[in-house]
Image (tube, rainbow, N blue to C red; front, side, top):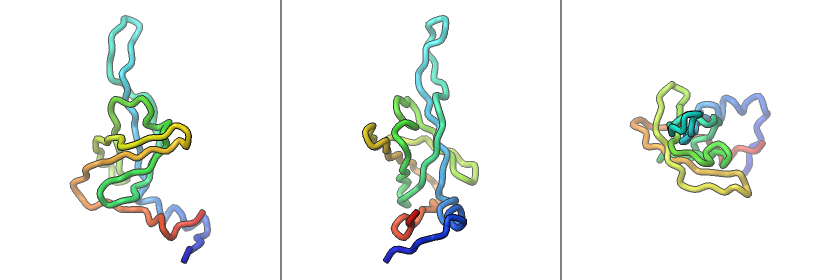
Length: 110
């Protein structure tokens, strides 16, 4: 059974499971020094209580470090478990200390 939700209910249904993702990569500056800097940001959705997050490949591509920000302000280091440039999909994993809010993607139709 698929439940079709009106678009105005989507933020309430999925919003608490949406996270921010910061991609940090090694960059070389004008003086040929290499440093870890923010390369880009994006978002993702927690889809499993073990800390699995669906995001886009372009958000995490080339990252040396991933920082995941939860809606409550807590941050965790993330690890890219898999990515596919063709479909622009990626999976990131965090090890959270507290129970995570998970999006109910089984009954969600957009």
